Length: 473
Image 1: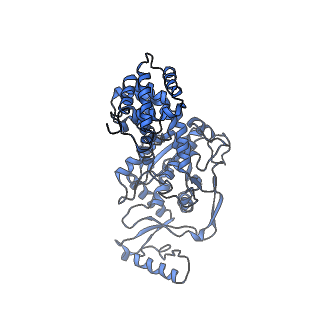
Image 2: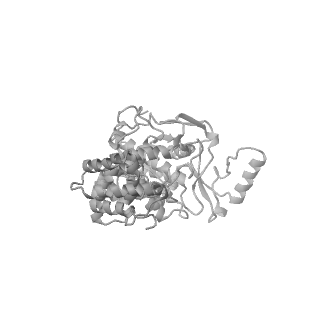
Image 3: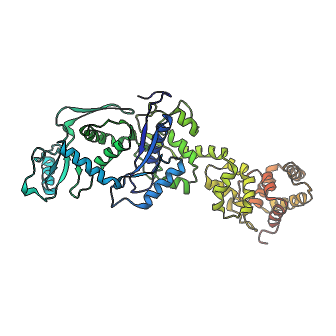
């Protein structure tokens, strides 16, 4: 097993998604663990697109996977490998297995297979194919007939592997039937293609979800038949919802692009959150990319399913928002606000106040809207409750006091507004809330004096004046 910061030389990992849909959260974590393991050991991490299912593989899905990985900073070393393009190589290896006597041509028809499967079910027996073609050479009557190529799996004993996450795992060979390597249309199966590609890419460590654990024993049968070096396996428990049930869309089983485009999550926050889903480093919760590379190992991947909690992700995202570069955050939300370049300067200046109150980019954009709102402001229902006739009278007094200010600084504004409140026997909040409503149209905002500074004197006075009129004026 790997341990601590010890390094293994020559590590090569791969992430191999099927392009039949978006890059989901479980796939992103698998990519992350492969990337980190390779980086920790100064090795290589490759991307392979397993597009052999031609009916379901699509270019938009490929684009979405590549885009999601790029956004998370998990691009592969070198160009992606496309599995379908290597079909000739896969067929070549089938011929090698046939020549070595480790595979055979099976002429059982689909109807014959269905009958045998139904007979096993009727007898309440597990179905294990026993083909008479395993040790039978086809004759002239079979020439040109449809057939598949199956591997000859061992019929006795057991196959064992030491998984770096699951530990020792053993399967009786009697449970592994002679599975298909090459279909009747001459297309290679997934099981064969994975083994050949992993070998040709020099993959040393296969890190993937534990739903593939059973596949490892079938794939080892091919590896051993070819006499190739066996990769080291690490099968990671799947991600469940916060309630312990299988992860679904209601839990957050969404595409990575949804977290970015719809939920306003930063890539560094999702990176950090996925890292902590099933792996830990003491009590550390905030872990940088550099620390993750230094600390990551497979010893500390848990054996139980991890639980996805969207609230925890949002809270973590809030941390990275507060720590984020103001210019970068402004650039990320500017398209949501439909503002020009000149307005971006104001957005950047406002960012220290805005980002302190937001957990995602959507909240950040919503909190910034008041800066660019056209007069007269639309006052939301909650803010409107503070704009009573009494409050509008106070706003008129505040307007007069603020209009006389020569210096429009935080301290001068604070002093002027407090003086109006005190002169009227009020606490500051009694004046600050209607001021906030008048200036932003909202019941919550950054500090009222920060708002006044950001809007500037002319815009601030104009907005206040709008609300000193009669309610229907």
